[in-house]
Length: 513
Image (tube, rainbow, N blue to C red; front, side, top):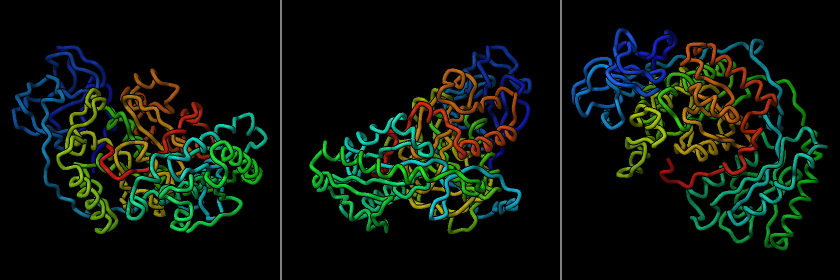
């Protein structure tokens, strides 16, 4: 289990573990300045970059959080800045120590759990929003589903105050793909997860008619039947594009009164299920936003809620910190099996799991995938790993769980939402702009500079931790309260900007991040 910095953010740089041979600059540091523990810089240090806390010889391990993140490819003098090109990435064998650090969650009694105002559905799940969904079975019906949704402006929906919106979900799949097998099963799971999502009151499914992802096959595979809250339409049977748009608008008009009958009621925080995402990460992500979100997930788990950690290629290198906390050996082995699949599938390709992170991550001070994974894994907190799910499978286990997804945020979040996530929490250091209807998406900034530059997109400034004005425990409590407020209807920044109209991206099995 990784240690997290909880004190002494007063100096120009922070040491994250006593065994580290680097410190991290909290802001730009001039040459000749005492950075930490008497360490004097020998050059100007860029904010977020690592500084050699001692002489590091060529071939020596570079340690951050007491984890080897790479090896020096040349001599690095004490007080100088480590650059991405002088930290080499090498794979290393790991001791998975299955279940060695497993500790059950110290659950709160029902009477002591927090509450929020949610929409209770017939299956017992609870929504944080109340949408009507227009779902395309194939790319050929994408224009139609968006035209129907676009018709329902705020003015038209004003008589239905309990309806949060009409949202279209189109994609690039549904034809030109195997008609059977895992690709189609995965698409069926994803579409089915949105059709029956707790944030969705009613759904209209629209197909072209000749596609491989037939409406009948989709409903049959997902055990769904048509009714007042699940309607279908085939464009080739409805007179084409214009006629289908008109018929779809009429169908939604008929659905609205019933959807508006749903009202919020007081429910336990145990019904909150948060998909955990990070994008545009920087070196502060592992110091502020990610561990603070992890603190909030630890709190949520005590209240009976669920956090879904994902982005399998972005836990590579620190997966042993999860397997050691697995509730059973079988759970830990399922996680290792998914990583083995990714390693084999990505062999020889220029992708993150093979070492090199994105240009934005590099500019933010991250050397390689191991260093990025240090932060990425922290979003899940410090509790036990309770289950591992494949992409878009419905999540039923509370506490910290893992879903196998690519690292590409829209694809990853789509799988989490299909699995039942009724909220997304998204940390970012560079400034990712993201929304994901029908689940409200919270943006957590890792540093104050970016937060102040992008205030319209950011919901909370975890950079206060780096600034030394707030500690991890306090920020974790604030994030948990933000979960409750958002679940009760408070709009997120991404909702105010109406993001999430184009971020429904089912995984077309492949590298993707």
